[in-house]
Structures are given as structure tokens and as C-alpha cells.
Amino acid sequence: MTKFSYIAIDASRKSVTGSLEQPDRASALTAIRKQGLRPVSVRQMSTKAVGFSLDKLLKPNKVKPDHLVMMTRQLSAMVGAGVPLVRALTSLADHSESPVLKQILAGAIKDVEAGTTLGDALAKYPDTFNDVYVNMVRAGETAGILDEILKRLALQQEKSTTIRKKVKSAMAYPTVLISITILAFFGLMLFVIPQIGKILTDLGGPDAKLPGLTLFMLGISGFITHFWFLLFPAIGGGIYAVLRYIKTPQGKEQFHILILKIPGVNNIIKKVAIARFARTFSALMGAGVAVLECLRVTSRSVGNVVYEKALVDAAVQVKNGKPLSVVISQNPLFPAIVAQMLSVGEETGQTDTVLVKVADFYEEEVDGAIEGLSSIIEPAMIVVMGSMVGLIAASVMMPIAGLAQSIK
Image (cartoon, rainbow, N blue to C red; front, side, top):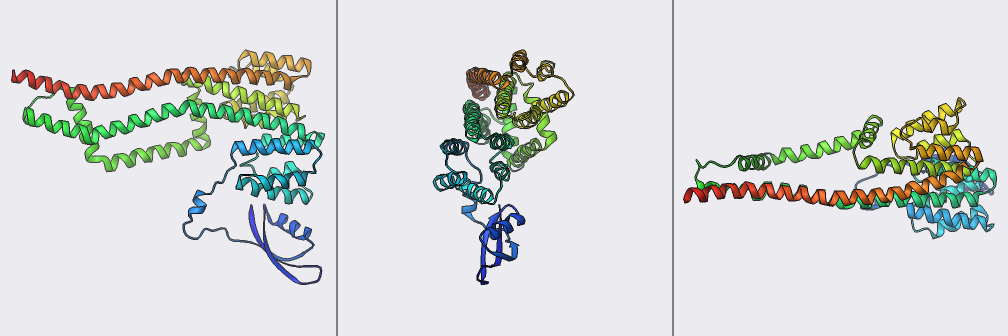
């Protein structure tokens, strides 16, 4: 939202000044006129930050999924009970726990009061309301079933949030173990190994012959100790460069192709993408959205560029007259059960209902795959940590044993 300052004239021809937030200048002019004022001057206020503000740094700029789900369910209940839309939005804005959502709803209320549809009003906030949300709301308004569509949206968001939380939870423990392993490695290399090397040199003398493993560990320790001021920035810069590259279209595509080739992980990624496809496509079809538009919107919500391109190609073939089930069956990214269920849905006219069952099935499969991966990762990480400690212990004990043998 952009902030505008204005000078206007009221009905009694008195000058009035003020400010307001609107997406653009045209919306600002409309909002001023709606207040019974005649705008004289409307200027965009500067948004440049002056100095450092801790409040701005700590202030959240995104709406949490839980807050969005709650807002969607409450709006559905109020619209279904016959509450006028503006009144329902005002009530939600007043009682929302999210300051960002309050601000967004305030802007949406002004747009709806000015005659904009709810779907178009929400489309101005793509960071909060994605294409799926906006298109379903538009379809609900057109068909007069907005309350039912909002219920579908809330359910879909809850399912997506649940999958996301499960994946994050499964990755939390391995991430902690990897972090501890890396910190322990650098701690030993910087502080422990140099002291052990000094002790071994003192015991065996400068000409003492040390085992190859010990020399190797001392070499790594010496390099890290002497060049840490170059090594750590290089590692940090490398990680930053990789993360930046992954955010580019080309890097994102290569990363998604790579994770689809990693054993264990690829199975989870595929099932998550299929579950998202099935549930999103089902929700859009149930809302009365056209098949081509469903494919276009769904392609951007699956979370993987490879699947996104596959669905875009599917839309082209469907536009040329091929049934979606046939197109899906020819793509190895989709299991046979998806094409079979789509075929049944096309024959019975219940594609949305059939795909809900597919989504439920694959969401359960995701749970099992995540548990299986977690059960493998945990002992694997313990083995890695144990191997690292064992190598260091061996590099210390081997020369000590050699020195003891020499003394005998």
C-alpha cells in the first residue's frame, strides 16, 4: 500500500488536508471523492527510511498461515449467516491478532466500499492472497456461493500448512545435528587438535614420525587456524551465493531438478507436489473455474518448477483437445493412479470429488515417507558424528601408542 497526502475542498468550500493509504493514485482519488470531498492536490508521500529503526526491523511483514485460515473460516461463517460483506470484513479487521492482516483488510474494505469485488480487492495483496485464493473467491462471488468457497479455501490452507509443518518438523532434528557436527568439527580443529599436536611434539621431539592420519588432521587444523579469516568469509560468501542463485529462475529450476534425483528426498517431494496439485485443482474445479484456468493457477501452487512446467504443457495439450487424464498418464512425473482417478472423474463429472480422495491418499503417503526418512536420517547423522570423533581419537591415540612402544 502507498501513502498519499491530499488537499481537498468539502461541501462548505473549506480546505481539508489529510493522508490515506491506497494501492495507487486512482484509488486514492476515488476514496477522497467517496468522503464527499473534491480533491485539489494528491501527492505520494516519501517512503524512504531515515536512520535505523528497530521497530521496522522487528515488525512482521507477512501474515501467518494460521491467521489467514482463521480469517477465512470466520468470513465464511459470517457470509453464510447473511452478514453484509463490508460489515464482516470490518469485524475481522477489528478483532484480528495480526497487524499486517488488519492493514490489508482495511485496504480491502475501502476497495469494496468503492464498488470493487472482494476478489479484485484481495488480488492487490499477492504476498498474502495467492492466485488460488483470489481465483476461488472470484468464482464464488460469480456463482453466489462465496461462503462455501471460503470453507473449501480454509480446508485447503489447513492441509497445505499441515504438510509444510510436518516437512519442517522432520528436517529440524537433522538440521540441528548437522549444525552441531559442523560446530564441533571447527571447535576441535581450532582449539583441541593444535594442543594435542603440541603435546605429541613435546613427547616425541621435533623429529618424531607421526602416523599419516595424525599428520592429515594436524594439516587441516593448521590450515584452519592460520587462514580462518579467509576461510569463514569464503564459506559464508559461498552459501550466500548459492542461496541467491537458487532464487533466480534458472537456479530454482536446477535445484528442483536436483532434489527430484536425491534418493529418499525425491519420494517426499513428488508426493507433496501431487497432493498439492490434486487438492488445489479439486478446489478450483469445485468452484466452477475453467479447466485451463485451473491448470494455470495450480501450476504455480505445486511448489516445484518441474511439475509447474509439466502442468503448463498439459494445459497446452488440453487446449488442443486431449483429455487431461490422457495427458497426465503420458507424464512419468505422475503415478498411474492419478491418471486413472482423473479418467473416472471425467467420465462421471465428479473430478473435484475424485481428486480430493487422491489428495487425502497422498497426504497420508507423505506422512509415512517423512517418518521413514526421519528414521534413516537420525542414525545416519549419529554415525557421521561418531566417525568424526573416532577419526580424531584415532589420530591422537596412534602416535601415543607409537611413542609408548618406542619407550619400551
